[in-house]
Image 1 (cartoon, helix red, strand yellow):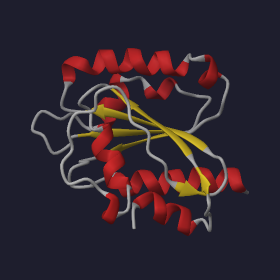
Image 2 (cartoon, rainbow, N blue to C red):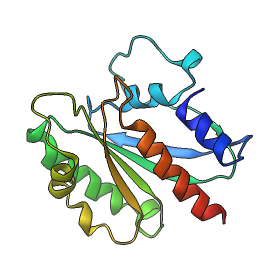
Image 3 (cartoon, one colour):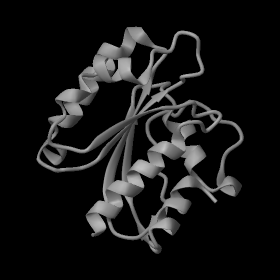
Image 4 (cartoon, rainbow, N blue to C red):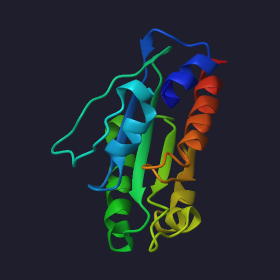
Length: 163
């Protein structure tokens, strides 16, 4: 059972799709994270770089929406680019005026050059996001480390909308 299936099960939610937009720079680990969120029998063994985009569907209840933004925490040179892309996202008309939860994965924490999730938060100026709930998790997508914390946070956000 994948993490998103467990999330929907814990909430008593079934049958409807939850639309989660997963974004980040190339080579940040988006596809690997999405793969780890699938049930184990649906996971790919070999992940290759995604050309263009991919769409995955997971079953859950209400039509909730969230954003997962993946950052390569070991790529300090591209943090500025990641911040620019995040700013573009936050100012997009479809996102700007919505209270949509954003989960940040500071990925590749296992690599020697990785900066902490606190440092990633500072570099991306996440403290300036006042109108949307957000959370940052350190992660190692290949091992699946840190993903459960993010799913738990998403569960809390969905539960808050549900009640």
